[in-house]
Every structure is written in C-alpha cells, then in structure tokens.
Image 1 (spheres, rainbow, N blue to C red):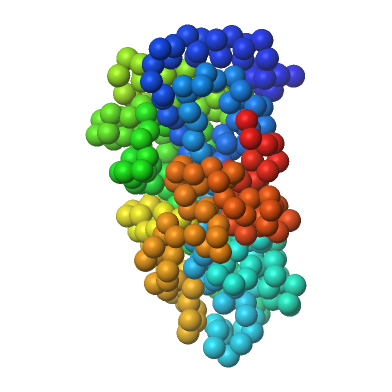
Image 2: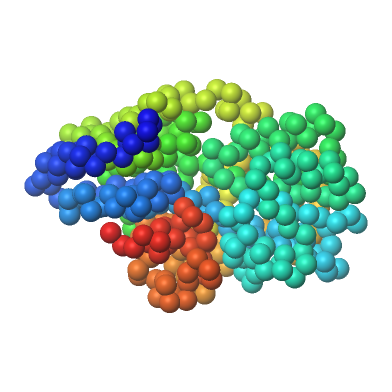
Length: 381
C-alpha cells in the first residue's frame, strides 16, 4: 500500500540500523531526545530501540500536549462547571467542550470525567466546528472550548475564533493553554540534569512553523536537529541524519520529513496564529513557567477569552505548589521528571501498580501519546 508499507519495510529498517551502528561504533554514549508524543508511540510500537546500538540512548521529552497541561488549568475548567456559589461564573449555564483525551487528565482533586459523572456540563467534541455548532444551537448557554495543543492544532482553533466572529456568536469562548515547542526545547537545553546531543524534532509541528524555528538551537547551543516523520523508516533515517552531524560535530537543522515540512513552514497557518494569538509565558506540568512558551488571545479577540469574560473566586490559575516547585511529585507521580527526560516510567513506584490507563494518576498515563502509556501498552524495549 503506497505511503504506508513503503515506510515500514523491515529489510530497509535493518539496513539503516546497521548503518547507525557502524556510524557510532567506538563513540561514547550519545543521547537523543524526541520531543513529540507521536514519535514516542511509534518508537515503542515498532520496537525501534531494539534496532539501535547500546551506546545510543533515546529519551522521550515533553511532546504530549495533554501531558504538559497544568493541574491548575484542569482546576480552572472544573471550576467553570461546578454549580456552587463560590465558583459561579455566569448567570447562564457553562458547557465545557473538549477533545476526549482531556477527560481523564487529573487536576488537584478531580477530573472532567469525574465531574461529568456528578452532573457537570462537559461535552466531548471532535473539532472546534462541533463546539461552534453547539454555541449556535444553544444561545442561552455559554460554550467554553478547552484550547490546548501545540502549533499543530492552534491554527484550527484560531480559525474557529475568526469564524465565531463572522457568525456573530456571543457565547463561544476559549480557555487557552496552547504551547509552542522551541521555547521548551531551549529550557531543556538549559537543564543541568540533561546532557543532550541532538533533537528529533516533531513532524506536524514543524510542518507549521518550519525548520528555521530551530536554527537557534544549532547556532547557540551547538545541538543538532532533524525534523523526522512518524513512520519507522522516517524515524530511523532521522536518527541516522542526526548522528551524521553529531559524529562530525557539525550542528545544523535538517529535514528528513521533506515530503511535508519546509524551511518556511506553512504561511497560511502562521498567518492565522499571528492574527489571533500572541506569545505569553505559560505553565508546563512538571516543568513550571517557561517564558514565551504559550499563546494567548490578542486584545482584539479578548471577548472570546474565558478568563477575561468570566469571574471565578478561586480560579485554578493561582500560584500553587506546582509553580513554586514544578519538579515535585504529585501524589507520588514523577510525570514531571519523565517529561523532562530525567527518569523513565519504570522508576515510578506507581507505574502499573496504582497507575494504569483505566486509573491514571498522572497525565503521562492519560494520553495515548504519553510516555507512560507507551511503556504500559508496548512494554519496555
């Protein structure tokens, strides 16, 4: 089958594996981090670590948007639909709309799934168009869409704001927690507990922002970057292209995923992002507050911002222990260290014993792209 089987050829994979082993033979340990949850799942699904030499180490980074969504953001969403006087946000009923993978993400004491079971108005949607239709259908209710994700999903959500304005909808709002990848990659490089030699850059994010967005990493930190696709041969070839740079000590940004990604990115998507959003400091679960790593609505669209429009006496976006000490464990969970690449799931005392996909303690087990979910589903490789 074209575009599937040709990227999953075992013979070719074995050949690339041998070239990788030959390239790093005799070298000290080399550490590469993939910063995309889809890469993580593919690596485990296809057992790619088994094809790599022992002196090559792959780490999973904070590339799962659900995993890095802060506890306080979940608390805020819950507060918006809790029907108590202290958390009343509007005279009209508030309906939270969200993609399904957010339902089980734990807040400080509950989750959206648990609150919906208690009667809270939480609707799972498949796109922002579903949320817009809900707003049109129920003008007597306030529809709040949980706007999370990286540069991949942000343009579509930006488009929903423009469409809502065009339709004259006054009851459609965003609770934004969009993240952007380059600033967190910079933060990881400044982490003294990490010692990285290269980044396997995310494919879909890079298709939006382009390879130029990573040039500062090669220039300022002398760390190699390769944008790779998600298929097994994409990843193996991307690793080989990284190692060529690392061995030569010639850091640059290269594109393996050339069938989609470009240096300049996607101009239409970037235009939408710039029109609707602007950079802001943002909180990452387990990593704390990272400068210019988030996106917030521009003043022109402030009336779509749920945080601006609504009032909650005890908003989740408060200075809590997670911000003061982002590396601290939550209920014994070490998701923060796993997202930073400092630890692996098997080092967590809760992994498989208490924490599993049916009863996740931490966000890394909730999402299908989470490192803990990958380890649980496919086992350690």
